[in-house]
Image 1: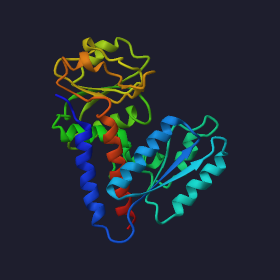
Image 2: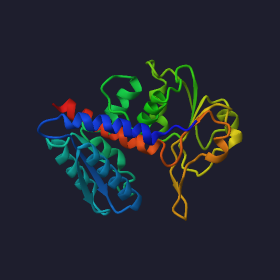
Image 3: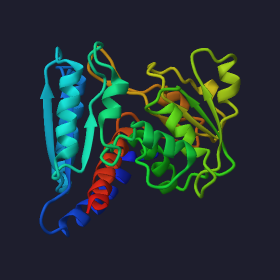
Image 4: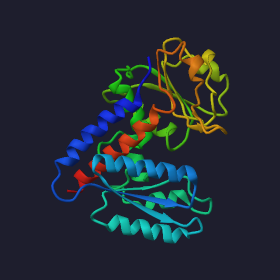
Length: 282
């Protein structure tokens, strides 16, 4: 069965639009800091700005040159921290190599950190405390599983990829002692031995490694749920995932497409976090 992230994201965005429409006075505000001229980053920022407009959220894009000094980026972030019309701040990644991502992330007010990357939010997420902003892609995966009625509690989830953006936070979310969590989580990566043996033990397999069509049919337990986080652009312009969709869909019980799977859910969670940031600031 196809897990239609696009359709679920549209439902969530419609709910957000309805809530924003009811707001009198200032609407929620999101600021995106874009450093340099990475074409992929520019495309992502355009899609976020468009999504904000569709639900009535105000968006501001701060474009900075690739050669900018670290202190100047932090200065721009501090201005946004103090701006009462901005409820949410994100810095579009990746950054130019001379900029320290950890220092820039730590400069964002954790109460406006809708990407959930600030150390305070990461710590709260790991501890299972309420009130933290959760990273948008892992949160989107969690919400997609819930809204698709995929059992999580007691299931073996194998995540291929240990990034701070997807792999680690998703593991932290799914292992919590909470309703719709309580999974047994294994994180695999480039140094994992006998990977196919491990993936075949997964009730839910999440591929987030950035290697096109890496996950093959023989790596899947029949009936498993397969979540493809990968977005890989081919020379002809097509987007494909980390999962060989055509063959894997023959054995998987549920599977997300690329595009139209996790990408729209990530955007929907960004909008949801922005609205929450607005409500928390009131």
